[in-house]
Image (cartoon, rainbow, N blue to C red; front, side, top):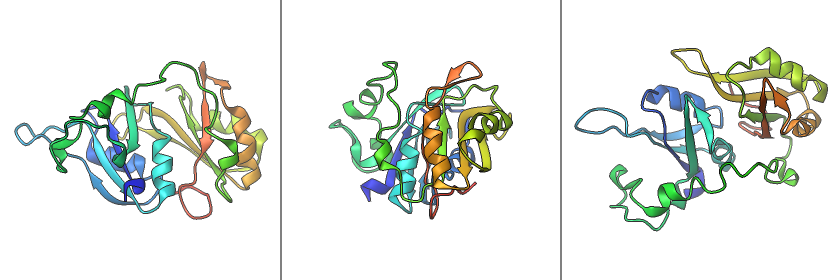
Amino acid sequence: MDDLTVFVGNLPFSVTEMDVRRDFENCGTITDFRFPFHQDTGKPKGFAIITYATRDGAQNALKMHETDYDGRTIFVRLDGAKGKGKGKGKSDKGYGKGKGDAGDWGKGKGKGRKGPRDLSEMPQGCQSVIVKNLSYDTVEDTLHDVFQDCGAIERVNILTDRDTGRSRGIGFIDFETPEGASRAMSKFDEVVDGRAIYVDWSERKGGGKGKW
């Protein structure tokens, strides 16, 4: 089950369990969701452990690694990829104790991006892409205008904070055909509202179209 479960760290303490679950459900169907709280204060511990129904869901969640989430850079990794640290067992208290839990996350940050990990890995029938590093000022109409020359678009969705309505800097685009999603890869590093965007595949449900 290690390839179905992800660990999400460095979450803002201001976000709620519902916020996090709602946003990560965009990646795929969730079968188990843990959002631990401190027993003495009742405040969240700043991380979540999420199990998906499929590997595609977990892999899509990993694409949110080192993205801005309500003002903080979150870290996402497979839950089975914890470092050789000093964790105290399998309970929630053991997470975050090992040397590899946080130290490995930041490696490579700020060294420049080289595009999606491998264009040859396009999921079969994929018709959706995830767009990251968006300006908080970017709206869905802007994304539609940027990607409309790639092919007919069915839906555009930018994740927003439930309470403030502020963009989280992450969007999803569903095309009518896989060819549209493939052409969208050419938009990688294009500057939109002053920020260079990151584009990658997003197969969040069934044959490649996302579940909003």
